[in-house]
Amino acid sequence: MGKGFFTQSACVLLSRPAVLDEVVSLLGETGIVKRTDDRPASDDMAGPSVVLAFRPEVNGYVDVDIQNRPWPDHMGDPKAEPMLFGAWSMGHFGPFTFPGNLQRAAEQSWGWKAGREIPERHRAFIRIRSTYVFGAQDETRLMPDDYDPLGELVFVTRVARRLLDHPAALAYFNPNGETLRERAALEDRDAASPPPLDVWTNVRLFNPGNGWLLMDTVGMSQLDRQDCEACFPEESNDPGEIDAFLRNVCLYLMEAGDVIKDGHTVDGPRGARWRARHIEEPLVSPPRPTLRLFPADAQPPPELER
Image 1: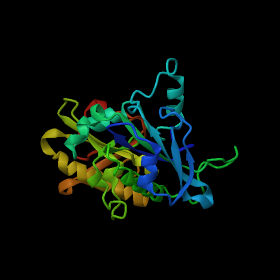
Image 2: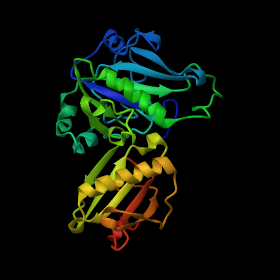
Image 3: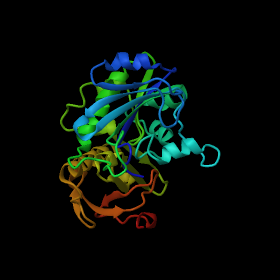
Image 4: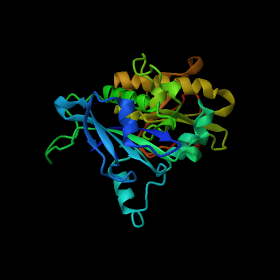
């Protein structure tokens, strides 16, 4: 699944249901071009909402709607819950969401331990989604010629930051990058340099029990870039250093594009060289193409050779 009707998304998880007047109060009237009250607050496609102007000259808008039910982490059964499954498959919960994303975000909430309890505490959420096809004709392109994923993601994050002032707000949740962040993590981050990849993307750690560790990123697809995997011997590497290494590689790819090819080597922690390989299917969900990196002087286990 890629960018389609909606091109970016984010959520604010709440401890109680919300009403649309609360959302309007937090956003302010400026920028609101449409308000819709007559939808149920559990409609999979769209609940009560307001539409914000983002780039109206190219039909760019951001929809903010209320969902007064917990995040549907299972994303629906095609037979028992066809509307929910259809909404998920069409990107209404985010263009790169995959079942279990909230659970994985909580399990991998290394920088904010309180985030691990958020799924159990939340009861509702506010959904933020950007689009260029509201009211457009069938032949309209999904994105403009000068599409800017970074600027778009910054705008969506600013909206989320305002909504985190809701009295029932628990956390910012990015379902595409599987991140959970507290309000302080978003303070003045959209104007930061380098961009706040830690808000939009997660770095995760896994131990397959074979003497090697796996760390990966999830969420770079929001910026039209591949995620990265790092596979490395447990005894000779520091996961904290690998975290920084992956962030630096992602930042480089964001700025330079797909310039690391199969067999290329890059500088890793402590001056070590790491070899790159493009992989169509990663070792851990969600499914997506990744750039796998492993120490050039180490022989990976057979399961990492595929």
